[in-house]
Length: 521
Image (tube, rainbow, N blue to C red; front, side, top):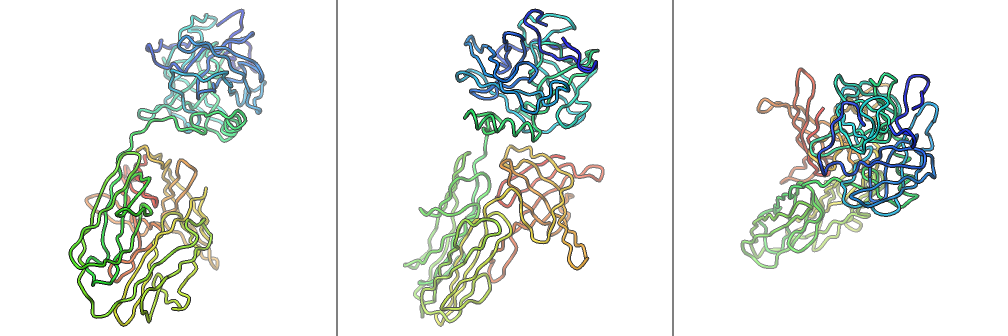
């Protein structure tokens, strides 16, 4: 042991005086195989396997370049240590190190690093091979115990619980886990303990500086690290669902109709008939060559399975004159957020009038240019009219995600945020406001800020609040419009708020991408 400014005790052991978790219990047989005992020529510590070729421990356990050894299921491994470059030996700040393992570790469930934040009052689970009382010895037994976070700072957190677990020499480098359902997150690395063995301190793994260190190590060593560049959680995904409609459902022979496909859930491919279309909103324009009553089918496929849906339509014929038809295309597709997209109408037959999204266009050059400012799927419509009647057509184009949305003249101000709990790609949902200042007048409106696991964001302005069935509902603008009969309507999503003591406690709904969420505050 050695004192740190007379307040802390480092938790690695010496080779000559090997020092288990105070108030801890031995783990159940066959569990926590990823938590291992590592040794070098000068010390012994605890570490955690976080990838096939990577372990994580404390920086004070071994210097950069040091080789440590450990075993899993009877197989011997060695690892070359790299300290966090910001590690401070005097203050023990950023006390995290990674080890590059000489061969792939098998037979364990890798722990997931640094993807869940910590806060005061949060319960944690500590593990380590250290002593069970001050000046005790190491007996090769992994122990587990519970504690509660009582403080946080920029690079570590402190924990203490009456009758709970406290770190002891030999526990250095071991994990502090937080459980969320059936998932566990490695949120801290065992670092120090006060000299009275009451308060334990762990280096935080979710802070941006640690994440940069993890990402740099993964890139330089070409390794996969759970929570950094690999998702190691096995999630169960429900099969997607779909709805298919024919617009219009009754036409004259020679006219065109559009099949519109809407899907929900996680979708990887969508088809109308045998033709692949976009999702969650897809469309296919068809010009039947026979009269009669018909049924068109569609299918969607995702990680959780597949689903089919159908729509019936009638073809009457023949018409007295042939109505013009059209095909609408978007270029480029997909388009980057803030980039221009050109919508071009191809007219078939005799047309005297044409429009795109309700805007009249020149028949000799029927096109318009747009600059989309919202991510997700966008639906545009074309319309042609001639002596024989009229026709319409549609196209979808995707506006690709960016780390954040550029809303001209607006500022997105997130407020209370809740973590998504249903296992989808949504990370958190924030109650937010949109501020816009024009001529010294500040306009403020409500919005939801959706943050995805991949770093993408969506802003969904609140169109209205209303009460239904004793619940508060939000109508959210989904950043597109579509034609319903002869009217253009906003594409909207519904979200349901749960409130307790005047505060929002939960919110459920669907994002612009069509991903469901269940956020808890």
